[in-house]
Image 1 (cartoon, one colour):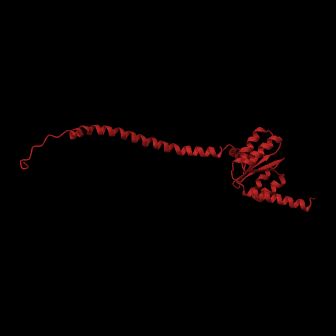
Image 2: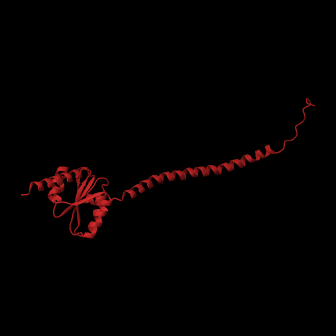
Image 3: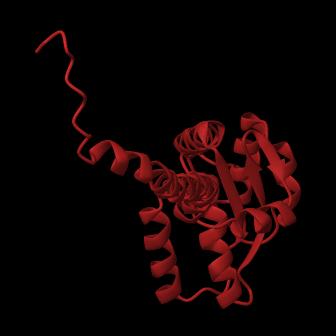
Length: 195
């Protein structure tokens, strides 16, 4: 039977993990097996760079923490050796990075996860991983906003150009009258009263 000290450490670990899971925007559970030390080091660095916490945790501790956090359905995915990646800011980052390594390492596989307070299946985790990066989404949105605006600018410029063509034609029509006004007038007959 474990000592009181060991039990206290496990309770503290479960409490900490459940608190992290509760305040995270997303998390991904992955079968942690068959990855080389080199790939693991690169993957962990990439996860840290994206602000994702990643740890290999005993299934019993993940299961208890999942129950406390309200993600009890995750316990059905806990077979073999597992790791959990938790993100507090970017809901896509853990899925995207871990999917990249799942494609490299045959025995390393995504299992499922949670997103915005609900447990999600493997298909949803993979769909998250396929979402383009935030910068690409922003540029696409700006491009879609810019399209109608540039179309409006082109239409307005066409109206200006067209109205600019009509002005010279109107100027030509008034030109003969202006020439007549500009020609010297014939001397008017003198008024006999002024003489």
